[in-house]
Length: 158
Image 1 (cartoon, rainbow, N blue to C red):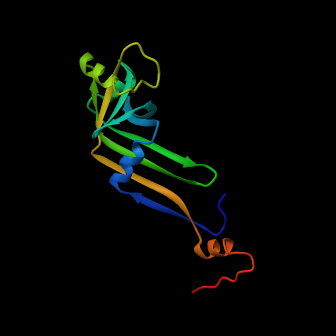
Image 2 (image 1 turned 60 degrees about the vertical axis):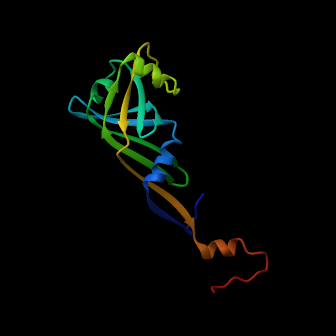
């Protein structure tokens, strides 16, 4: 748990760190438009080269809404007790991959749809615009030094 001597700070992440974190997440969220309204759905995914691949049921609302539309994809991790965490968002045009030969090739990568499906396709989103942020806690250096000093030691500023 954090204390009054901890400092919370926000870090804007570079592209390399965003891509690294993107590959660590298990479940993502796809934001798309459905009936002229925003919609968000949890999805399984994988990162393949410069694109995100999302397996989904063929004919699903996600597949229908994603045909050529610009979508947003987000992953995150957070600690609700410490109020720290990170998020990464990718925005780009989507493409539905439904060709059976191409789907079979992507199946070999190991992704499966979030919900069971007899027949599924993939949504591909090129990683063109990626942004991320991390909220961390940095202990107060003076308080940290005093807390870790040997018993009886005197700490003072240099």
